[in-house]
Amino acid sequence: MRFAHPWLLLLLLLIPVLLWRRARRRHAAVHFPDSDLLNDLPVSLSVRLQPLLQLFYVLGLVCLIVAIARPQHELQESRVNTEGVDIVLLLDLSTSMDIPDFSRNGQRQTRIDSAKQVISDFIVKRKNDRIGLVVFSALPYSVAPLTLDHSWLVQRLDGLHTGMLEDGTAIGDAIASAVNRLRDSEAKSRIVILLTDGINNRGELSPENAAQAAASFGIKVYTIGIGGGLPVRRGFFTLPPQEIDESTLRRIAELSKAEYFRARDLQTLEEVYNQIDKLEKTKIEMKQFSRYEEAAGNWLIAALGFLTLEKILSLSRFGRLPE
Image (cartoon, rainbow, N blue to C red):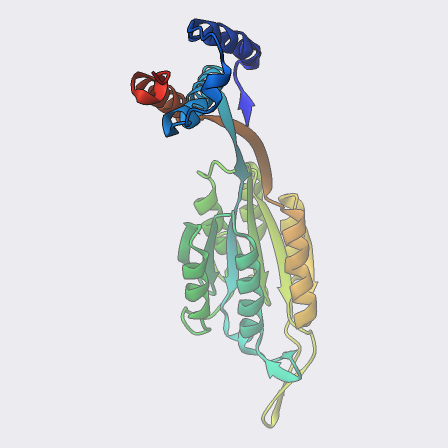
Protein backbone atom coordinates (compact mmCIF):
# COMPACT_ATOMS: atom_id res chain seq x y z
CA MET A 1 0.00 0.00 0.00
CA ARG A 2 1.15 3.55 -0.72
CA PHE A 3 -0.22 7.02 0.05
CA ALA A 4 -0.93 9.64 -2.60
CA HIS A 5 -0.34 12.42 -0.02
CA PRO A 6 1.92 10.84 2.63
CA TRP A 7 2.81 14.23 4.16
CA LEU A 8 -0.73 14.48 5.52
CA LEU A 9 0.12 11.64 7.90
CA LEU A 10 1.99 14.27 9.94
CA LEU A 11 -1.44 15.28 11.22
CA LEU A 12 -1.26 12.20 13.43
CA LEU A 13 1.14 14.19 15.63
CA LEU A 14 -1.74 16.55 16.50
CA ILE A 15 -3.80 13.81 18.13
CA PRO A 16 -2.06 14.06 21.55
CA VAL A 17 -2.70 17.83 21.54
CA LEU A 18 -6.38 17.29 20.77
CA LEU A 19 -6.64 14.73 23.56
CA TRP A 20 -5.08 17.15 26.02
CA ARG A 21 -7.48 19.96 25.06
CA ARG A 22 -10.41 17.53 25.19
CA ALA A 23 -9.40 16.40 28.71
CA ARG A 24 -9.25 20.00 29.94
CA ARG A 25 -12.71 20.79 28.66
CA ARG A 26 -14.21 17.68 30.26
CA HIS A 27 -12.44 18.16 33.61
CA ALA A 28 -15.07 18.27 36.39
CA ALA A 29 -14.72 21.15 38.81
CA VAL A 30 -16.22 19.36 41.83
CA HIS A 31 -14.52 19.91 45.20
CA PHE A 32 -14.79 17.67 48.21
CA PRO A 33 -13.35 18.50 51.63
CA ASP A 34 -12.08 14.96 51.92
CA SER A 35 -11.48 12.92 48.76
CA ASP A 36 -10.97 9.81 50.80
CA LEU A 37 -14.73 9.60 51.13
CA LEU A 38 -14.96 8.85 47.37
CA ASN A 39 -12.76 5.80 47.57
CA ASP A 40 -15.46 3.83 49.31
CA LEU A 41 -18.10 4.58 46.67
CA PRO A 42 -18.93 1.76 44.20
CA VAL A 43 -17.65 2.19 40.62
CA SER A 44 -20.48 1.91 38.09
CA LEU A 45 -20.26 0.20 34.70
CA SER A 46 -20.58 3.52 32.92
CA VAL A 47 -17.50 4.83 34.70
CA ARG A 48 -15.52 1.68 33.86
CA LEU A 49 -16.40 2.00 30.16
CA GLN A 50 -15.61 5.71 29.86
CA PRO A 51 -12.02 5.04 28.58
CA LEU A 52 -13.66 3.46 25.51
CA LEU A 53 -14.93 6.89 24.48
CA GLN A 54 -11.40 8.19 24.27
CA LEU A 55 -10.29 5.06 22.39
CA PHE A 56 -13.09 5.49 19.82
CA TYR A 57 -12.17 9.15 19.46
CA VAL A 58 -8.51 8.36 18.80
CA LEU A 59 -9.33 5.55 16.36
CA GLY A 60 -11.74 7.82 14.50
CA LEU A 61 -9.12 10.55 14.12
CA VAL A 62 -6.45 8.06 12.99
CA CYS A 63 -8.76 6.54 10.35
CA LEU A 64 -9.81 10.02 9.17
CA ILE A 65 -6.22 11.20 8.73
CA VAL A 66 -5.24 7.98 6.91
CA ALA A 67 -8.26 8.43 4.61
CA ILE A 68 -7.37 12.01 3.60
CA ALA A 69 -3.78 10.85 2.91
CA ARG A 70 -5.37 8.63 0.18
CA PRO A 71 -4.08 5.09 0.71
CA GLN A 72 -3.80 3.12 -2.54
CA HIS A 73 -3.36 -0.56 -3.34
CA GLU A 74 -0.92 -1.41 -6.13
CA LEU A 75 -2.28 -3.58 -8.94
CA GLN A 76 0.42 -5.18 -11.08
CA GLU A 77 -0.51 -5.61 -14.72
CA SER A 78 1.34 -6.74 -17.82
CA ARG A 79 0.57 -6.27 -21.46
CA VAL A 80 1.92 -8.54 -24.18
CA ASN A 81 2.43 -7.11 -27.65
CA THR A 82 3.10 -9.61 -30.39
CA GLU A 83 4.25 -9.13 -33.94
CA GLY A 84 3.23 -12.43 -35.48
CA VAL A 85 4.50 -14.02 -38.66
CA ASP A 86 2.02 -14.82 -41.42
CA ILE A 87 2.85 -18.24 -42.86
CA VAL A 88 1.46 -20.22 -45.79
CA LEU A 89 2.38 -23.91 -45.81
CA LEU A 90 2.71 -25.43 -49.28
CA LEU A 91 2.40 -29.22 -49.34
CA ASP A 92 2.96 -31.47 -52.35
CA LEU A 93 0.16 -34.05 -52.79
CA SER A 94 1.48 -35.78 -55.90
CA THR A 95 1.31 -39.60 -55.87
CA SER A 96 5.07 -39.88 -55.31
CA MET A 97 4.44 -38.63 -51.75
CA ASP A 98 3.04 -42.10 -51.04
CA ILE A 99 6.48 -43.67 -51.30
CA PRO A 100 7.27 -45.29 -47.90
CA ASP A 101 10.94 -44.36 -47.60
CA PHE A 102 10.58 -42.77 -44.16
CA SER A 103 10.30 -44.58 -40.85
CA ARG A 104 9.12 -43.92 -37.29
CA ASN A 105 9.97 -46.26 -34.42
CA GLY A 106 11.20 -48.87 -36.89
CA GLN A 107 7.98 -48.81 -38.93
CA ARG A 108 7.89 -47.79 -42.59
CA GLN A 109 5.99 -44.57 -43.24
CA THR A 110 5.07 -42.64 -46.37
CA ARG A 111 6.42 -39.20 -47.12
CA ILE A 112 3.00 -37.61 -46.88
CA ASP A 113 2.28 -39.12 -43.45
CA SER A 114 5.69 -38.06 -42.16
CA ALA A 115 5.22 -34.56 -43.53
CA LYS A 116 1.77 -34.20 -41.94
CA GLN A 117 3.08 -35.22 -38.52
CA VAL A 118 6.00 -32.81 -38.61
CA ILE A 119 3.91 -29.95 -39.99
CA SER A 120 1.29 -30.50 -37.27
CA ASP A 121 3.96 -30.11 -34.61
CA PHE A 122 5.21 -26.95 -36.32
CA ILE A 123 1.71 -25.45 -36.37
CA VAL A 124 1.15 -26.12 -32.67
CA LYS A 125 4.39 -24.31 -31.75
CA ARG A 126 3.49 -21.13 -33.67
CA LYS A 127 0.73 -20.00 -31.29
CA ASN A 128 0.88 -16.29 -32.15
CA ASP A 129 1.10 -16.64 -35.93
CA ARG A 130 -1.56 -16.77 -38.58
CA ILE A 131 -1.04 -19.86 -40.72
CA GLY A 132 -2.66 -20.87 -43.99
CA LEU A 133 -2.44 -24.14 -45.94
CA VAL A 134 -2.25 -24.72 -49.69
CA VAL A 135 -1.76 -28.15 -51.29
CA PHE A 136 -0.83 -28.83 -54.87
CA SER A 137 -0.11 -31.41 -57.49
CA ALA A 138 -1.09 -30.55 -61.07
CA LEU A 139 -2.77 -27.43 -59.68
CA PRO A 140 -2.90 -25.66 -56.29
CA TYR A 141 -5.83 -25.89 -53.91
CA SER A 142 -6.36 -23.67 -50.86
CA VAL A 143 -7.21 -25.80 -47.83
CA ALA A 144 -7.28 -23.06 -45.19
CA PRO A 145 -6.88 -19.27 -45.20
CA LEU A 146 -4.60 -17.51 -42.76
CA THR A 147 -5.98 -18.33 -39.33
CA LEU A 148 -5.15 -18.41 -35.64
CA ASP A 149 -7.45 -21.39 -35.15
CA HIS A 150 -4.60 -23.88 -35.21
CA SER A 151 -6.61 -26.83 -33.89
CA TRP A 152 -9.00 -26.51 -36.85
CA LEU A 153 -6.02 -26.16 -39.19
CA VAL A 154 -4.46 -29.38 -37.87
CA GLN A 155 -7.77 -31.19 -38.43
CA ARG A 156 -7.81 -30.00 -42.03
CA LEU A 157 -4.22 -31.15 -42.45
CA ASP A 158 -4.98 -34.62 -41.04
CA GLY A 159 -7.66 -35.15 -43.68
CA LEU A 160 -5.31 -34.65 -46.64
CA HIS A 161 -4.14 -37.51 -48.82
CA THR A 162 -2.66 -38.05 -52.26
CA GLY A 163 -5.07 -38.48 -55.15
CA MET A 164 -7.25 -35.57 -54.11
CA LEU A 165 -6.03 -33.59 -57.12
CA GLU A 166 -4.90 -34.42 -60.63
CA ASP A 167 -1.39 -35.83 -60.50
CA GLY A 168 1.62 -33.70 -61.37
CA THR A 169 3.85 -31.09 -59.74
CA ALA A 170 3.03 -27.44 -60.40
CA ILE A 171 5.52 -25.72 -58.11
CA GLY A 172 5.34 -22.31 -59.80
CA ASP A 173 1.54 -22.08 -59.67
CA ALA A 174 1.57 -23.27 -56.05
CA ILE A 175 3.98 -20.49 -55.02
CA ALA A 176 1.84 -17.94 -56.87
CA SER A 177 -1.24 -19.14 -54.98
CA ALA A 178 0.55 -18.77 -51.64
CA VAL A 179 1.84 -15.31 -52.56
CA ASN A 180 -1.67 -14.26 -53.50
CA ARG A 181 -2.82 -15.06 -49.95
CA LEU A 182 0.03 -13.14 -48.35
CA ARG A 183 0.42 -10.05 -50.48
CA ASP A 184 -2.29 -8.07 -48.65
CA SER A 185 -1.06 -9.15 -45.23
CA GLU A 186 0.11 -6.36 -42.92
CA ALA A 187 2.42 -8.65 -40.94
CA LYS A 188 6.05 -7.49 -40.85
CA SER A 189 7.23 -10.99 -41.71
CA ARG A 190 5.51 -13.13 -44.36
CA ILE A 191 6.84 -16.51 -45.39
CA VAL A 192 5.99 -19.53 -47.51
CA ILE A 193 7.26 -23.00 -46.62
CA LEU A 194 7.25 -25.23 -49.68
CA LEU A 195 7.64 -29.00 -49.29
CA THR A 196 7.93 -31.17 -52.40
CA ASP A 197 9.55 -34.37 -53.62
CA GLY A 198 9.48 -33.76 -57.35
CA ILE A 199 10.24 -31.60 -60.34
CA ASN A 200 8.04 -28.84 -61.70
CA ASN A 201 6.23 -30.44 -64.67
CA ARG A 202 2.82 -28.76 -64.70
CA GLY A 203 1.32 -25.30 -64.45
CA GLU A 204 1.64 -22.06 -66.34
CA LEU A 205 4.12 -20.17 -64.18
CA SER A 206 7.75 -21.15 -63.77
CA PRO A 207 9.09 -21.54 -60.21
CA GLU A 208 11.70 -18.81 -60.79
CA ASN A 209 9.11 -16.26 -61.93
CA ALA A 210 6.89 -17.15 -58.98
CA ALA A 211 9.85 -16.68 -56.61
CA GLN A 212 10.58 -13.27 -58.14
CA ALA A 213 6.94 -12.29 -57.60
CA ALA A 214 7.22 -13.36 -53.96
CA ALA A 215 10.41 -11.33 -53.54
CA SER A 216 8.72 -8.23 -54.99
CA PHE A 217 6.19 -8.41 -52.14
CA GLY A 218 8.88 -9.05 -49.54
CA ILE A 219 7.75 -12.67 -49.05
CA LYS A 220 10.34 -15.34 -48.28
CA VAL A 221 9.92 -18.82 -49.74
CA TYR A 222 11.67 -21.55 -47.75
CA THR A 223 11.98 -24.72 -49.81
CA ILE A 224 12.28 -28.31 -48.61
CA GLY A 225 13.16 -31.27 -50.80
CA ILE A 226 11.78 -34.43 -49.19
CA GLY A 227 12.68 -38.03 -49.97
CA GLY A 228 15.45 -40.53 -49.37
CA GLY A 229 16.78 -40.54 -52.90
CA LEU A 230 17.09 -44.35 -52.70
CA PRO A 231 15.33 -47.14 -54.62
CA VAL A 232 12.08 -48.23 -52.96
CA ARG A 233 10.78 -51.80 -53.16
CA ARG A 234 7.03 -52.28 -53.71
CA GLY A 235 6.05 -55.93 -53.89
CA PHE A 236 8.03 -57.57 -56.66
CA PHE A 237 9.08 -54.23 -58.12
CA THR A 238 11.85 -51.83 -57.24
CA LEU A 239 11.08 -48.19 -57.98
CA PRO A 240 13.93 -45.95 -59.14
CA PRO A 241 15.01 -43.10 -56.87
CA GLN A 242 12.67 -40.13 -56.96
CA GLU A 243 14.26 -37.13 -58.59
CA ILE A 244 14.19 -33.74 -56.91
CA ASP A 245 15.11 -30.58 -58.76
CA GLU A 246 17.36 -29.26 -56.02
CA SER A 247 18.85 -26.53 -58.19
CA THR A 248 15.40 -25.04 -58.80
CA LEU A 249 14.40 -25.28 -55.13
CA ARG A 250 17.69 -23.67 -54.15
CA ARG A 251 17.13 -20.91 -56.71
CA ILE A 252 13.60 -20.22 -55.39
CA ALA A 253 14.96 -19.76 -51.88
CA GLU A 254 17.83 -17.61 -53.11
CA LEU A 255 15.59 -15.25 -55.10
CA SER A 256 13.29 -14.70 -52.12
CA LYS A 257 16.15 -14.36 -49.58
CA ALA A 258 15.24 -17.58 -47.79
CA GLU A 259 16.93 -20.98 -47.50
CA TYR A 260 16.73 -24.43 -49.08
CA PHE A 261 16.73 -27.64 -47.01
CA ARG A 262 17.07 -31.32 -47.89
CA ALA A 263 15.19 -33.89 -45.76
CA ARG A 264 16.11 -37.51 -46.47
CA ASP A 265 14.55 -38.99 -43.33
CA LEU A 266 12.07 -38.16 -40.60
CA GLN A 267 14.67 -36.88 -38.15
CA THR A 268 16.13 -34.51 -40.74
CA LEU A 269 12.64 -33.28 -41.67
CA GLU A 270 11.91 -32.46 -38.02
CA GLU A 271 15.21 -30.61 -37.76
CA VAL A 272 14.37 -28.60 -40.87
CA TYR A 273 11.09 -27.31 -39.46
CA ASN A 274 12.77 -26.63 -36.11
CA GLN A 275 15.41 -24.59 -37.87
CA ILE A 276 12.80 -22.58 -39.79
CA ASP A 277 10.97 -22.04 -36.50
CA LYS A 278 14.14 -20.51 -35.04
CA LEU A 279 14.85 -18.41 -38.14
CA GLU A 280 11.38 -16.86 -38.18
CA LYS A 281 10.76 -16.04 -34.54
CA THR A 282 7.65 -14.17 -33.51
CA LYS A 283 8.46 -10.91 -31.73
CA ILE A 284 6.89 -10.88 -28.27
CA GLU A 285 7.22 -7.76 -26.15
CA MET A 286 5.97 -7.74 -22.57
CA LYS A 287 5.33 -4.42 -20.89
CA GLN A 288 4.73 -4.43 -17.15
CA PHE A 289 3.10 -1.50 -15.44
CA SER A 290 1.30 -0.71 -12.21
CA ARG A 291 -1.96 1.01 -11.54
CA TYR A 292 -3.36 1.89 -8.15
CA GLU A 293 -6.76 1.35 -6.61
CA GLU A 294 -8.04 3.91 -4.13
CA ALA A 295 -8.53 2.42 -0.64
CA ALA A 296 -9.58 5.56 1.27
CA GLY A 297 -13.24 4.57 1.28
CA ASN A 298 -12.92 1.86 3.93
CA TRP A 299 -10.80 4.11 6.15
CA LEU A 300 -13.34 6.92 5.84
CA ILE A 301 -16.22 4.59 6.74
CA ALA A 302 -14.28 3.36 9.77
CA ALA A 303 -13.54 6.95 10.83
CA LEU A 304 -17.20 7.95 10.62
CA GLY A 305 -18.16 4.81 12.50
CA PHE A 306 -15.77 5.38 15.41
CA LEU A 307 -16.51 9.10 15.71
CA THR A 308 -20.28 8.58 15.47
CA LEU A 309 -20.16 5.85 18.10
CA GLU A 310 -18.05 8.05 20.36
CA LYS A 311 -20.52 10.95 19.98
CA ILE A 312 -23.57 8.81 20.68
CA LEU A 313 -22.02 7.27 23.77
CA SER A 314 -20.80 10.65 25.05
CA LEU A 315 -24.40 11.92 24.98
CA SER A 316 -25.59 8.91 26.94
CA ARG A 317 -24.98 8.08 30.57
CA PHE A 318 -21.60 6.62 29.59
CA GLY A 319 -20.38 10.10 28.81
CA ARG A 320 -21.55 11.74 32.03
CA LEU A 321 -19.77 11.85 35.30
CA PRO A 322 -21.65 10.03 38.02
CA GLU A 323 -23.62 12.28 40.35
